Amino acid sequence: MTQLGLDYPTQWGRQYPARLARNLYHLFYVGPVVRYLSTLDAQGLEHLSGPGPYILVANHTSNFDTPLVLTALPTTVRKRTVVAAAMDNFFMDRWTAFKTVFVFNAIPIDRHKINRRSSQQALELVERGWNLLIFPEGGRTPTGQLQEFKGGAAYLAERTNAAVVPTYIHDAGLLQGPKYAKAPQFLEAPNQKRHHVSVTFGPAMFCAEGENIRRFNTRIEEAVVALGQEVSGNRDYNITRPSRP
Image (tube, rainbow, N blue to C red; front, side):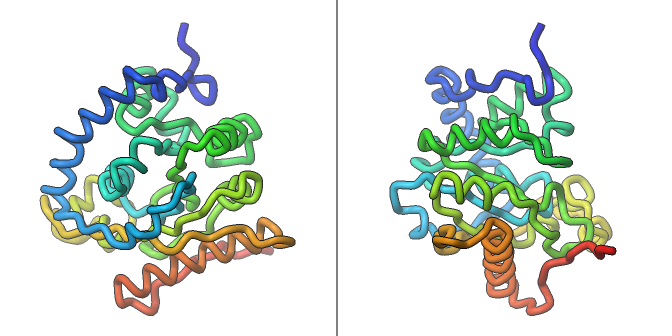
């Protein structure tokens, strides 16, 4: 019987038959649909011209964010990209898990606590040259502001010396907001079946010698905020940090 959760097997999704089928699916279905619904604009692609691997760290507004980013990526990068997907949302049902791996080349991540098994799989894939798309907020923003990042991306970059590419997705929450988003301003906005969305990739970042993971994680957060302020023109866009005792 196929295991679920962190035990769900995902290696088949990275083998040649699945990769070929996925590439065709993206070419003839996912990409055209995304570009029709979002009139997608991709910026900063020059930051993805190196050898990689890249750890793509993005803000998370909508359930449509993953296909948006994957469609915005250069084909050569997308073909070698794995998506970190929430175990509790996508890997607790066999059919959902199958679709998530097939369409997005996903691996399960425990977003609620530090889990060595899920981080080890991601670490090994990056070390083998796979790019990783991760949403470090751990879920869609409930406020529209960036939520404090969990440290997984910074940890993986520090361990592998992979380049972190800060990524900002603009206005995804306004694309069929009641269906895909969570923040009130998107839920209360008109349900637009089409909306212009942009995905902007920033300059690659590396963990500096002697820099601890917490500080590097803060720099990554700040880079995504800076992209968000620049692209949106909203200087109030910032990080919402939970109050601590």
